[in-house]
Length: 69
Image (cartoon, rainbow, N blue to C red; front, side, top):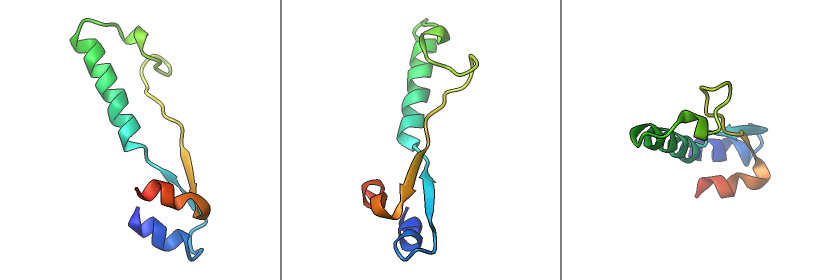
């Protein structure tokens, strides 16, 4: 996100979206664990029965610091 910081602060970039890699990894782990331990995918909130969706997080100049950590 360093390149985003260099573009957001001076204003050459109005905003961007955070790719929630931690949330994606957690969703994949939960799915894999359920399947590996005999659980059902119906126990997981899947979109259309097959997608794990996470909300986008808008990143603006004012809040870029919380995403840099």
